[in-house]
Image (cartoon, rainbow, N blue to C red; front, side, top):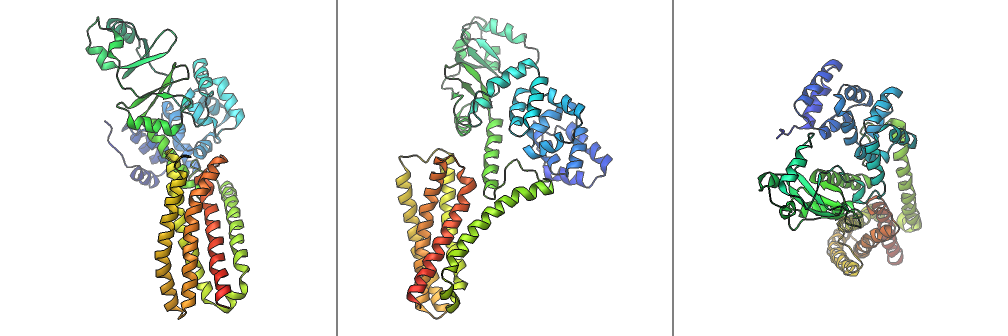
Length: 448
């Protein structure tokens, strides 16, 4: 088993070395069995010119796997730096899974070039995978699995396995003449069984399987509940498509987490740490523009009560508290909903109960914190009326925040929009506008 290596320490070593020593040290790391995923993270931590130089000096057999492990923008930064000859040599070495991974981020003309250059077998596997959507597990399965007829003897199975000189499979999948999936056998069981034993009698019981149209989340759940680190995947006619393993489940789970982490600020999990300045400015500028529009809406709401704010300066001091409490309460509910929807726990049958539950939590918390904040504000500004006013605004805003924290992700999902991406912006706008309106509106009625 390879010893775990802290990538941050390796990055620090390379950062302190000169160009020549960087290449020497990088190859020493590779010789010490640094895995492709760690190499990709390491290269992504350097500016593009250094990254390209280090990638070029990797062993040729690692070029494709390291690029595939990279985030989309980092991969493109290297591809864009290649000469025409280098690019063709690189594309020709792609396998079907790498081409699937790259196809969402590369220009169509490069994908077309790759399809002309890769082997016919890999192209056939690629075409099979493209039948399925991005969110369906059939698109991402490892199709190169070892299969045997389910009705043969163990002796015959061993003979067929010995012809496979390239690798020894840990798992052998059993099929019939129509390629219908009939079970899975451990290679070790085949070696230990009697020659006359029927292969089908060694098939594992209670095996977890997936349909190729099921989601990536289903694949992660299936791996979690499987007794084995692989899960077979079949099509609608029960024909074996391939399998997914625990490494795929972990990497997919990480990508989902990164996507949701980045989405709240309008960024993508494929964004490069050293994204080009102009490109990064453009991408982030769009989100800043959206945020500006929402901020203007909140400011317009405040402007409606300019008279009361000018007469009671304390209102301007206390407004951020109202917005902040509503924002936090709403974000808690929104986060809970996004997680529940990602795990397929939120359904039509439990939405109403969930809404009632969150409204109750928001209202009770609203009352508790309204008493505390109202008391503090009343004593601070020597004004019981001001205390009652902010207390009412806190109750209203926290209850409304809980309500919209449930409703917004449901509506976004209905319109095929990612709740993790747009939910926080919409929710913040709603809680700001309603909070300010409740606070300043009540103040204008009772304090003037």
